[in-house]
Structure formats: structure tokens, C-alpha cells
Amino acid sequence: MSPTNRPENGPPWRGRLYDVLFESDQNGAATAFDVVLILTILSSVVVVMLDSVETVVEEHGFLLRVLEWIFTILFTIEYAARLAAVRSKRRYALSFFGIIDLLAIIPTYLSLLLLDGGFLLIIRVLRVLRVFRVLKLVRYMGEARTLGRALAASRYRIIVFLISVVTLVVILGSFMYLIEGSTAGFTSIPQSVYWAVVTLTTVGFGDITPATSVGKFLAAIIMLMGYGLIAVPTGIVSVEMAQAAHMARKMEGSPSVRDRVCSDCHSGGHDYDAQFCKGCGGTVVDVGAE
Image (cartoon, rainbow, N blue to C red; front, side, top):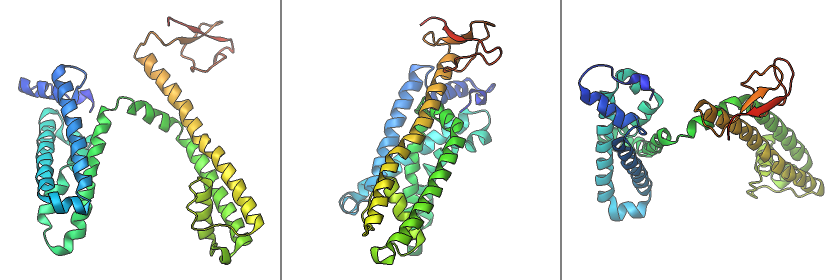
């Protein structure tokens, strides 16, 4: 939640409530609230998971329902408190975390309205939706912004990589369809493409296997290619992660970050891995304290 949604006027308790709910690094009360809320979220997700185990429901069904309603009431109070604390209630309600907070409580209430046996499947879906509570933890992960910036910066390269992989598996799957045929389980090109995806990702379910020597040779090539392909997106994101972390520390004024300055024109702000100045072409050097 952006600090600009802090109430500017009104009773003093709204400002104090906002600080506790949204400013976790400002005071001890906010930190304690966040710790309790994180533990509550994790506990509620565990209850949702146990509610899907038939043997546990048979023995402890009543206890699970009681705990679920306790968690729902607690999250309802939290949601109402957040709405009361912010300046723009509509802005918070339509924000990412506002929607997640609503999804954390609404399935339990909706299940009360769907008591007819024909809606049992809908109730089951609503119960599963309660696991969205785990997304409430995202607001407490400080590095999530750095990861988000890194993924956003590398999205085009990742898209090109994925398109290349899709093209490759279609070609390889088509080859296997021609080589093996239906006798070995490669009954169609989509089925063969599925086998290529499973093999290229080194999963290897084993439900379809080549029978000919040529098919086995091609399968071995695909397996070896899979190890190399896994490293490509990892490298793309890692580079962007390092740069995003560097820029984040630089914006925070960390003394451990050196600035990149041209030795000729003395201009700064160069990329962390830059060797030459973008303006004059001079050599870029590190300056600043460790």
C-alpha cells in the first residue's frame, strides 16, 4: 500500500491504525502485528490443506470448521480495519492486496449461501480459494520488488526464449512422430510434442518411449539439450536480479555501493557492468566508499 493513501485528516486513531497496519518498519507495534498476522496466515493455510484430507476431516471435522471460522473472523476484522485506516477505501479495495484480503474471507461466507447438494462442487472450489491467503505474505517480502523489477526487465528475452523452445519441441516432436509412429505410442504430432516437452525438461514420465535406434539417439540429444536450456532463463533473470539489487542499494544510499564514473568527462550513473562511458567513450571506473 502506497504511503500516499495515509489519512491526512480525521481522528488521530486513523493515523495510528494506518501506521500499525501498513508501516511495519516504523514501530514495535506494527512489527508485532505483522508477526502475528504472518503466523495466522500460515496456520489458516494449514487448516485449508487438512480440510482436503478425508481421514482428518472424519476425525477432526468439527475442530477444522471452528478454526476456519476463527480465522475468517480475524481476517474480516483485519480487512475492515484496513478499510477504516486508509484515506481512499476504493483505492485499497481495488488494489492487489485489497483483492487478496477479500478473497481470504469471502469463500467461507459464500459457502453458507450454497447449502444445496447441487452446489457441493462450487463449495469445494470456494474452499480451495482460501489458499489465496498465502498471497497475503507477499506484502512482507521486501525482496519481492527487486524480483519483480528483474522479471519485468527480462520479460522480452524470456518471451523470445520460450517461443524458441516451443518451436524446437514442435519440430522435434514432429520428427519423433515420423521416426517412431503409432506402434511406439507416438500416435499423433500433439502426443509427440508432449513427449518432446517432457524429455526436454528432463522430467521423463516414461509413459512414451522410443523403440528404434534413431529415435533413442534423438531422445538422447533432446535430453542433453534440456540441461543447457534450463540455464538460459536462469542466467537472464540472474543478471537482471544483480542489476536491480545494485540499483536498489544505490537508491537507498548504501555506502557499500560504488558509483560508476567516467574518468574523462566525470559523468556518473553508468550501469554496474559498464566499461566505457555512454557519452564520450572514456573508461568507466568505480568511485565511492566501500
